[in-house]
Image 1 (spheres, protein in one colour):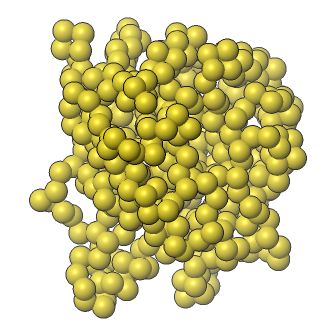
Image 2: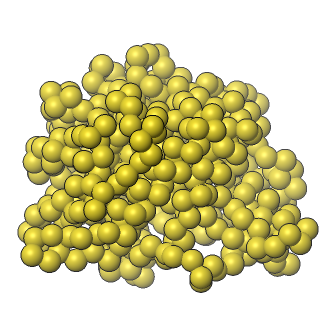
Image 3: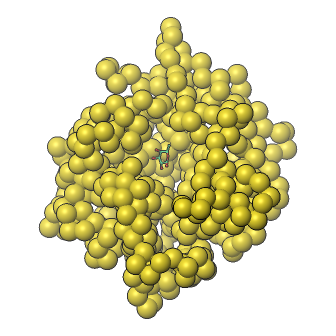
Length: 442
Ligand code: FCB
């Protein structure tokens, strides 16, 4: 069971970066050594998390980090994408938490020794609760608090980091968290969603400026997720609804960064839903990036709906992962080439891609053949985009190991390493071995 790429694929060059990715809340545990955050609170809300679980222990990574880094090294990856828990490194009064900072510094130093590049994300959704209590991303001030955090932590980390991403997937923070309420903090209001999105983008711009000053030799940028929108028919109403969905959920986050403007759709939103945009905000948001991180899992199909404008259409005939997400590798090539034609892109890294499967550990093995297939087909899709002229420099598998999958709790397994949550034992799945072999046989 191998991942096979075409012989002459540019992705077999040693210059192409392969990595694995995780996020703080999903793996760290050790919640008593940090400030409570919005996900701690959300996990307490009845019905919010499918298995009623929380992130208090997760993969116990704060205690097991040394072994986890050995594990990462054994996969022969070039890079490790991790996120920093804001509330572990910054105290409520805004000062640095030395103990928390030291945890990450030791980890970054060990990565360097192991010759693994650190790709650090500053915000992967775990907003300290005291900031949420002050309005969270609905409060413009949070953008400035984030930039202050970016300033302090990038100063403390010195030259240990290869690449900084300000935010992971602002769409999820804003839309899922504040507009439909299925993620923390669980607010369901369109005005709130659009406001949070704007403040997140502002936070990105402010922090990027700080990172370029404090860490000029790292590649600094942002990670966005894209779920390409396909029309269910050629009917103009369906096509228009699909375009609306794409502008509302995908282009909304990239266009302000690349072009310094929101999609025209902004003007057609009811006045009471539009975010409050100050003069100069879009200049801050649209500073040049050193890289764009692209996360891709699936596509969605839409048709027109009179009441809600657009409506998802299920594609029952297709193959789906355990998340119920359609497996559609072609969508990744199409996404990358379309972004490349719409925008002046910086170099791209695929910062997340992967599949949840209902894995079982049998005789010490997890034979996750469907996941191997998923990786192979999506890596090939990336290769096709490179052939069509898109400048893609790397690929990160989501995820290094099974972890807390947000509203799904521990029910969905995305790892290329299996985690037994009772014993915290890790077992490299067949997909992890195939990924390792692909990388080491380059
Ligand atoms: C992405 C998140 C990541 C993980 C995957 C499955 O939206 O960035 O934390 O949960 O989905």
